[in-house]
Length: 87
Image (cartoon, rainbow, N blue to C red):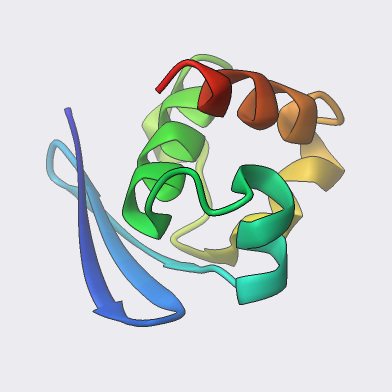
């Protein structure tokens, strides 16, 4: 289970079982992926679910900006845009 807590407008704490992560999300990137159709918290949660479908939770960086996912998984942005259409 993925739990997301807002720290401030650009930073979120994510908990997956007993592991904790800090995730940064810039406003422009948020708008690009969601057109503001879902909350930032929901985008962070969906992004973690995307990552967990591809790698173990222990392999996820403890602190990162969401924009970095695209560098590791080129399909990320398209996947998030598609997922957001159905939320």
